[in-house]
Image (cartoon, rainbow, N blue to C red; front, side, top):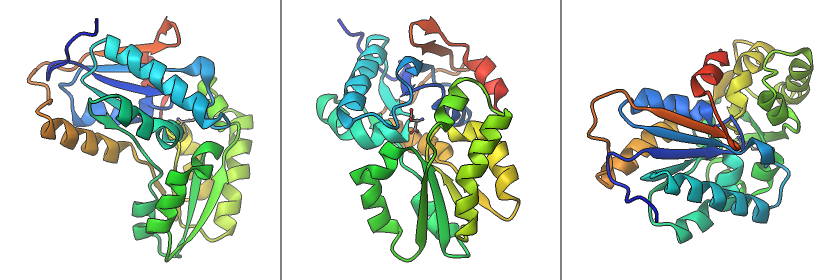
Length: 257
Ligand code: DGL
C-alpha cells in the first residue's frame, strides 16, 4: 500500500539521469525545509532519441517508485520526459505534477538581436509541446534550434570539462552564434552541468537561460495552492537513487561549477 502523503512528506523528483539535479539545486535553495527524493534513471539515459511510448513507460515506473516512497508531489526534472509524458501522468495521478519546458518565453523577452538559440534533445525539439511554445512565444523573433546529441552522455559520465565535451559544445553552440543569437536557452536539465563551457564558448555578450529557478518557484506556488508546504523547520533531507544504487547527491552537486 502506498503511504498517505501529507505536507510533511517529501517531494519526488526524477530525470533520465543526473541532469535533474540542476533543478533539485534550485528547489533546495528555494524550499530549504522540504525533504527531497531524487531518482536518476541513468540506465535508460538518454531519453532524447527514444520514442514517446518508451519515455511514458519509464515516467510511470519512476512516478510509482517515488509514490511508494511517500512523495506528495512529483517534479519531472527533464524537458524530454515532460514533453512526452506529462499529460499522461496528470491523467493517471492526482497529486501535483510539475514539469518543465525550454525557456523560450523569457529568452524572447531578453533578446536584443531578435535571434535566440535553443539547445535541447531531439525528443524535445520534435515534440508538439515545443511546437506550441514556438507558436506562442516565437512569432516575433527568430528561433534557431540545435539538438545536442551526445552531450547528455558526457554529463552522465562526469566529463564536464573534457576536451571531447568542449569540442561537442563548440560544435553545437557555434552555429547559433553565427546565426546571430545573443540569448541561448539551456533546454535540457543536463546542460547546466556544462554551463561554464557553454558560457566560455558563447562569450560574455551572450545570455544563458535555464529553467531550474522558475520550476522551483512554480513548485512552491503549486504546494501552497494544495496546502502541501512542509511545516518542518529543520533543513530538508535528501535521498537519491541512481538506478538501483544510492546516489550521493551532494558529491554530484559539488562537481557543478
Ligand atoms: N535531462 C533531460 C532533459 O531535460 C535529458 C534527456 C535525455 O536523457 O536525453 O531533456
